[in-house]
Image (cartoon, rainbow, N blue to C red; front, side):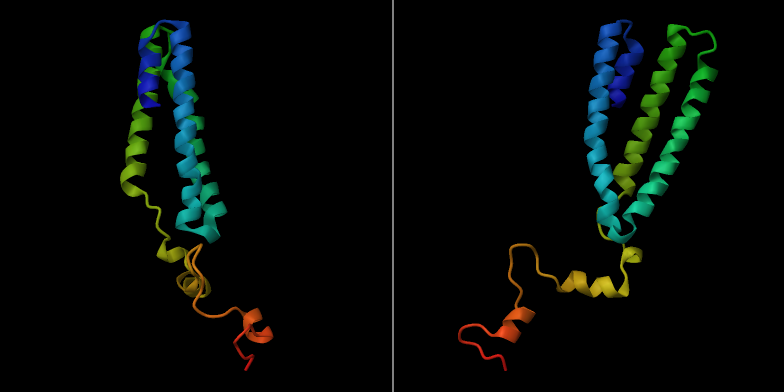
Length: 148
């Protein structure tokens, strides 16, 4: 997205700018698919709460962007708008690097409850059978086993 924003800022062609802005938004959509599920990875029980906080913080940029853009584009020249797109690209690169180096997909210790911590460790991975028989097998018995 950042590279596309730089091209939009440099380009003086309406169609080229529109194409690169569209391509850049497509890249953002691809990136959001990883960001969106990360809340579920790090804290499944608190994913909704975390999504609300992160989207709330992210909304600050939506509030500040028009203020910064109007301050930078006092005269509406192409050079001023170029600076707006460069600032947007810089913010995108900075926040992406922060996410790249500071994020994790691991379940966080603070997100585990004493009840769920044991359940996660004891559950068998998908496709593998558990070593202990299920409750129905013990009660009803299976061929060759006694209900006991």
